[in-house]
Length: 361
Image (cartoon, rainbow, N blue to C red):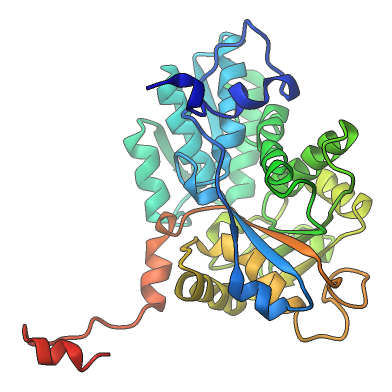
């Protein structure tokens, strides 16, 4: 293979924008370069000349956007001499941390809320060789324990409280600007631990400062109604939502996300579990894109904005005419197959005969 034409991951592609040096051992699985897919049906629903694109981060190596941050976090941990990393997770972080630790040849410990993680993500952590610990508590309890361990033991924390994670994740904004030729007018994201909305805004600001984009987007974040601490401006002790990846009651990047929303003249709002599942089914059955429930929160948020005299979240009379809108889809649908299976129709029994099959058309 001619390596000149092979994308070797975000550090190789965006080295000048990342906190790495020639001494940094790059630990990569060729993450990034995920597709920005035009959505004809969503564009038609918004109408008024608007274009809707989805950034499908579920096509990263472990199936979520977490890989972008993890390549930088693990590379820096190895550079600093770490032999082990630790994280708290609702699932996607554990998969990414375990995979990149395996790639680096170091140990990984993941702390998960007992009984609160999708099986697809749990299997990943096991298969990548992580030591998986289920604690009696939620994600916020797990993160408190990780902070305590990381502060006193020789192990590197690779949650998004590690600034290297945000540095890696910001590269998704770079890719969007490169593909569109500038920033979108609106960028809509699911919000859980709030690192992603923080990272995208950082990326947009950096490329804008470099003259790579002449404008900045409004950042619109959507939390699940049962796990919406930023929206309600208070910690949620027992967050509950079908969207396990954003089932977080005390986001680590709360302040940074609030600043991103404020500085971009955006806003935060909520969507119900029913709206999330409806959006998940719509995206799969109408656009052919299968995402986990948390990812669908961005689509549910966009749909919530439609059909109103005022946009549901931002201080505009409506979505601007001719707006370019990007919705981030954070994880692949196979991350959480059990939820999808509960929403699916039944298998249709039929005889092994042509006539029986043709009745279905």
